[in-house]
Image (spheres, rainbow over the protein chains, first blue to last red):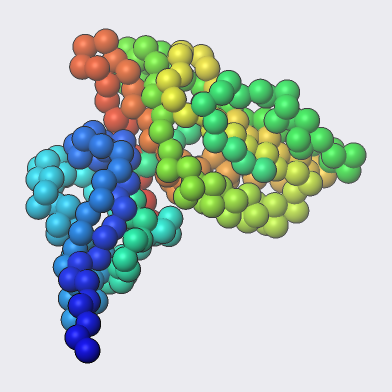
Length: 92
Length: 141
């Protein structure tokens, strides 16, 4: 019997403040190819920066949270994770 | 106790939340929207938050402050949405046995909110529409 495995993981990506304005929507769905080793936050970062070159052009430091926890570039992504793209914060 | 809301911050209610018969000191910090920043006029501020993560970050700050200064009670609120000049954007109330701990804990809480809680402000200016405030990178650098 032959199994068909999904080729992509699907992520729910939220963005805030200046990143939300650049991207043009509060939330989007993004698919990343599944890699043999693992799909990581670094892969997602590359994809976002390719899609929205204004982020690099405006030199915005973009932090990434996965399921509301701060992640680093090595953090592994799973299907249906909630991603948040966070510019430098300025509350208060 | 921490909450993020689009509604006006009720300071009396916040103070009621830190009332404690064993407290000899209560401090209240209010952050308010000012009409100028550096050399330009500001007509209001728009705030937004990643609420899920902001609430978790604030709970951590509260727990650490309460433990470190042995506080009686701690309560904080942050507004989101469009605020006018003079409106309260953030409020922190702290009660403790003596005043020194209350002052220190209040200062600690607002400093950490500004660097760790995912909230953003956009200053509304007459000419350019708005300016996102320069902030602290999340996770520190």
